[in-house]
Image (tube, rainbow, N blue to C red; front, side, top):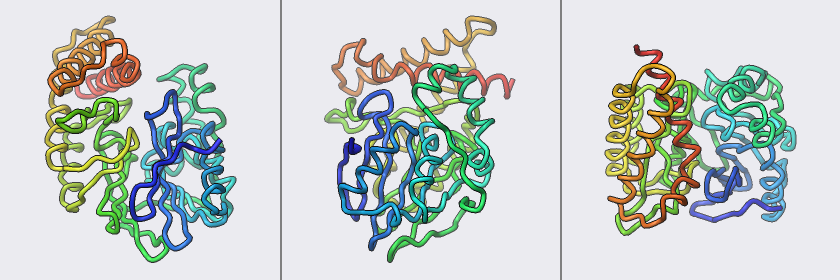
Length: 314
């Protein structure tokens, strides 16, 4: 099966990696003068569809120059090993803090198993293959990576994770933001525009660093963000302000949570209730069950991440 594709602009195509449901997670293919970069690798079960897309476009695996996961969480980087295996000339461009986990994913798998459980990891992520160290390049802050006649610039972007970077593409005036510009599912678009919330997936939520990262992203003057979850959004200053409020809302919810066994449930309930209120104010008319279907996993993960952050900050 070919990955569901939406051609965008300047040789950029959004590929739906079909994780759990359509419209949840994307990989972006950038094609410039016959060279290809994949920003994000998705999960291993989705890799055959990415390769099928290449073939459908008349592109060969030999033309893939880079695989660029924005960070090493498995929904972004779990498929990198299989994708690199299939693309013999590709270099893996990964955050310096994440490189060792791509070379030896043992700890990455263990961490995901602790969060999701072994059955979900096996079903959702499949084989998480190691990548030879001599094919791994460090994505240093400010570094530029030639692609055809253009360049892609790396921006260190902590806040969601310490091993997170963004990619700035001057050609499209766009930022490929992974998770650090939040989640924005297209089902929630209204006349008011996109609906955006933070993602605090365990284990490295850092609100202060996140605010600094947003400053850096806005300073590029980018006109749009290519979100992994999910699609293209524009009007970045206003969306960044919304995201900042969301981060601070989460900090307040976390600090108000009770101690003890019921903390996770209380956090999840608070996160979900906040989202439902915000969605209604945004003009979303989907019923509560549909909202839960779309955001339920994110509610769980955000609550877990906030719990980890509370344990760190005391």
